[in-house]
Length: 379
Image (cartoon, rainbow, N blue to C red; front, top):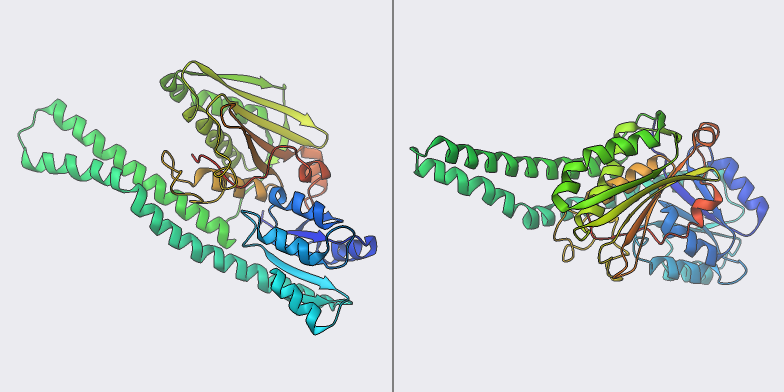
């Protein structure tokens, strides 16, 4: 299966929306907002690659909507195409000044619209890859010093003291091995995220039981839970069938479980719940940690979003988790209050809905109460 780009249509005229859905529905994942206020509420959760934005709408107009979207953390790289019947040069310039990437005049030519969408989606991908390469270099300078020391220092001891007794030699070799594995895992994550951002990533979706995935992940997390003195409590239904790439969704569950355990005080619980809400499965992982600072929260799912706050993880696991869920027509979001713990919410379509329609998110996702997904105390 190919991961389709997401487009948010912002237009209060039903006939315009229907036309755009007919043109774009086969190739892209779509959702619709009928006002600027709704677009600003939906976009952080939906994470579109591109927004088609009408200018004349009730409430705030397209210009103000564009300014607000550009000011929202996690949305600044999204491509925004204004679509309007306004033809004056001054009106187009106002759109560009508000932050629009391009301006399309109604009635538009379908071939031109599709061509511009493809161009801007390709441009967005190139820009993200360039930014990612720069951030990977920054990450390597921050995160490789400890594992490199864990390789170089023990290796130097082995060279300087060739007559070390076997137990000491074994201990040093184990340090070298563990440090090397940390470096390899870091590089593998960076390569995986780069592939996802470039559109080269593919996934294989098959019917699978989310409950079984969660149980397997909880079992695999038992050693870490024991080490952290944390109990994992499961509240699951009997089965929860969805169309998923099993290894990738397993990685998502492991990422948020490990995150919850890492930031939980000793002798507390991490609660894992899985329920069906209308056409969606809701998986939540709640810890009793210190919570996420408000200035960090908007950057939880950004790759290396805030290096200064990212002391314990590499800033990649949650960014990868979001990309995986976007490919599954799902979402991941986080709600946290300092001093009161953190809850991650994963939403995935139930099997019947996914099999029938891959083109758009159901309305309850777009209006999810668990906060704007953009970033946190990373894994």
